[in-house]
Amino acid sequence: SQQGEEDPQALSIQEGENATMNCSYKTSINSLQWYRQNSGRGLVHLILIRSNEREKHSGRLRVTLDTSKKSSSLLITASRAADTASYFCATASGSGNTGKLIFGQGTTLQVKP
Amino acid sequence: NAGVTQTPKFRVLKTGQSMTLLCAQDMNHEYMYWYRQDPGMGLRLIHYSVGEGTTAKGEVPDGYNVSRLKKQNFLLGLESAAPSQTSVYFCASRPDRIASQISVGYTFGSGTRLTVV
Image 1 (cartoon, each protein chain N blue to C red):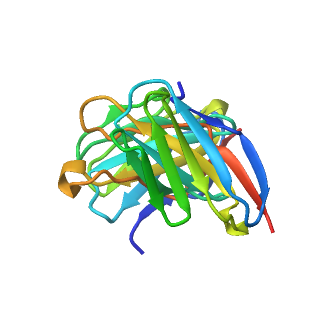
Image 2 (image 1 turned 90 degrees about the vertical axis):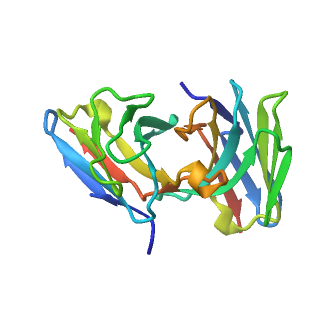
């Protein structure tokens, strides 16, 4: 079963615009991560936000987390053609230290030059 | 370059054949994972390991076996391949959270594209 539901499934924008992707999840989490996947490649870790954090920044990326709504958003500002990729949220939950992540189905972002 | 290396990158199997996918990491990570990625399904966890000599089942373990005889290697085996196992397989690793003192993300390999006919 998938923990994360991502919205939208696909997003197409012009270079320079901002892109916002949303992730909702079902159970309590310890942390939430976002990954990028370029076509035919492995996933690359972008950013991690812990359950006691509300917002985090990394370069042009801004992630928010609302645990009361069980949702997160990823904002990419001033998008570039190189940002074209699929973006996945992944949640870690439960006790223990297994580090298991449950991934959402992803949002496919196309940035047109 | 340091990272996670998966071999082979591509493979075509006939139904009933067996094969082993190899994942190797040179970052001294404790934790290793095997995922499969199917269209519209995201990534689903097959098996994982929290250290040398340990393995555990993930979300979709049926039809797969794993071994972690050495810390740097995590093998995924298909004993009798089925068309339903056609997928892209990703291996990932991460350091022990306590050892690293921080929460960290996974490092992924580039994937193995497997087709079972």
